[in-house]
Length: 325
Image (cartoon, rainbow, N blue to C red; front, top):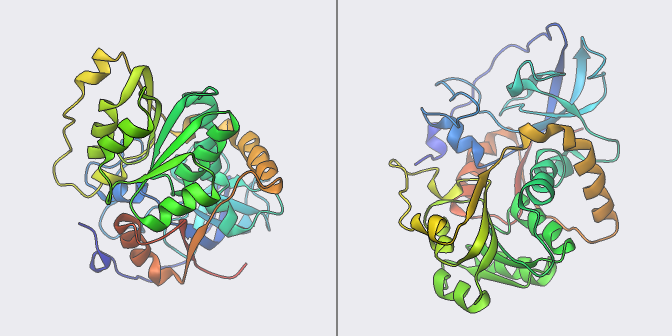
């Protein structure tokens, strides 16, 4: 289990940008479930694990102060894997995926960039429009439905006419998802029996399951999938702190119900970044997409933010404000 005692603050020198790089002054960093995977010795599978003493890897937003590439001009607001630090290097292409920097359109604040734009918007947009493709009238279940991705995925899928059932861990989140976001229903798995609730809410089965947590929740929803259902794997929040991997008990349902299972990563679809940003901006403007941010002030509170993320002690995207714009 990761707690605040696992981290310490260290001072270092401000790096100089190399060829085709930019120096970024970090304004905000996001606290994402992916961080926990990067802290494991086995890593995440698409990026290497962090070594002891390295800055914690995380999404962030900052302003370019020095540059050697026209693609990342001075003054531009950029999103990249800044890490938990005040200064970071970004590059303009995929030569180093851990430093890939993307310029954000004007009018987007640093908090918005980490809460509902950038990686969040691209992941959600690709997950719904490219991978899941929910149809009108289909029942779609979303785990971690009050998270940045979960809440945005649900709102996007509702625009396509799908009937949305969320899964959350607190009553406050359940009410936000149903009363403010308009989901048809939401289950508090800590207060209600998940399997029974799904049977009641989706008696004909779940057509699409967008899973952000894995583990026992995934196992339970597999039991309630409809024939030819689709499971979209986006995250493993529930299993990140386990010493031993969770073993699915109902994997045979994949065969018996002829379920399609697909994992995806937004980085494989980064060319959709402008399309996703434009779409989400329009939906925010017309009021059809809503979001929340849980902002903590100061880089020193980043470890606290990570603990809160896994304890569920937040509502909205956990963002750490590092410095003023």
